[in-house]
Amino acid sequence: MDLAAYRAAAAAFSAELGVELYRHFAGLADELAIEPIYERHGALFTRAAVDELRALAAGADDGDGARGLRALTSFAVEGFLGQATKELDAELARREAELTLAVDGERIGYRESSIVQANEPDRARRAALEAARLEALAARLTPLRLEAHERTHALARELGWASYHAMCSELSGIDLVALERQTAAFAAATDATYRERLEPELRAGVGVGWDELARADLPVFFRDRDADARFPAERLVESFTATLAGLGIELGAQANIVLDLERRPGKSPRAFCSPARVPQEIYLVVPPIGGRDDYVALFHEGGHAEHYAWVDPELPWEFRQLGDNSITEAFAFLFDHLLEDPEWLRRHLDVEDDGALARRAQAQRLLLVRRYGAKLAYELELHGGERQLAELPARYAARLGDAVGIAWPRATWLDDVDPGFYVASYLRAWALETHLRALLRERFGVAWFAEPAAGAFLKRIWRDGQRLRADELLAAVSGAELDFGALLGDLDIAA
Image 1 (cartoon, rainbow, N blue to C red):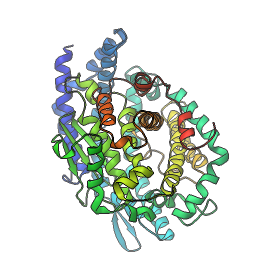
Image 2: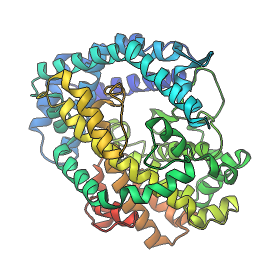
Image 3: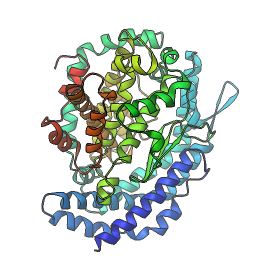
Image 4: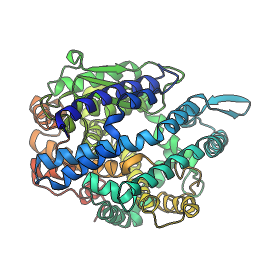
């Protein structure tokens, strides 16, 4: 195989796909036209390409050569599976964009419904939105997700792996079972204080405690509208720009970042960053919701964008565009964590906080880490191939319900799953971000975000793209091991 030619073709495919994903999910194009892109680049994702890259990776010595070949193999496999499900993915995107819900005589877009729910003060109406959304999901979207799920699992076995889980573990180099043990230990360590820690925050944010809480209330809890007054819309971009300036970064001079904050009917409710060509062409997209959520979205996705924007353009393409996404997620969390930092709040928003914002954010993070740990355990079952498909919705609801502490619907058993065990990227990113934030504070002070030297430190890390895994990166910059003990300490919970 001509690896240079393969890289060049892969980069062209990735750029086209990144732009198309941006256009559709930013509400600029009704159709997600990914099928023609796959057709133009079909040679990248043949069975022969997968087998050849996998063989080259297996025979490579340790080091960057082996890392790069594993990343390219993962890319080829992902594309091979994407080829097989592209029609389903396109139809799923079309249905999501067109689907509307009937709630109290009003038609609400399916994609908009989560935003509406997060801003709805009436609990009965939130429950009605939840019910309508779950009903539409089960009837219109889950059949497509199920077909795609079964197809990808069959193809993973056809490619020679025992299961989809085995395939993802080999390609990522991450021991997912060991990670699940760590997250289970985190859950056990937080069991005794979890409800007690969340109770006052739930009552303050939702108006009810554990005795009445329902899943339909969680979007309101995470939305945290009470904090909106401290996060004025007119200072959103200014505060992000000023934060970067403190690190020695001029956002206005970064022609490689396109910032899209406009409201559009078909825009995805989830903010996202589409790195079409790293580091030359990066789209940063935030759907305006209002208040603090817009800040969280901009700073989180801005963390992704800055990471990608500073990657060394001379790195092999696979280290610029592929690799362990725990790393880019960690930088996203690093930036959105500033919104609970008392020193950042004082300097950039003139907010004197007594710790209330930090306590709410800690409660939210505690719930999320427990929830994602349960998701990982469930996905190991979902993708392990040892359970009957009919058992899985109940397993999902039980695991998530036990972890979060409320009844959890079965209907989201496939909708709540991202491809390739991306749940592991989030979990490892939370741990990595905690370590990195502590390191930045130790080296550059509590106001590290206002120190150009801290920016220079981050730029040096960013230049390396995702050449290393998250655990390797942490070891390289600090000598520490990636573990969840740091997260417990950050949440003031004894191990």
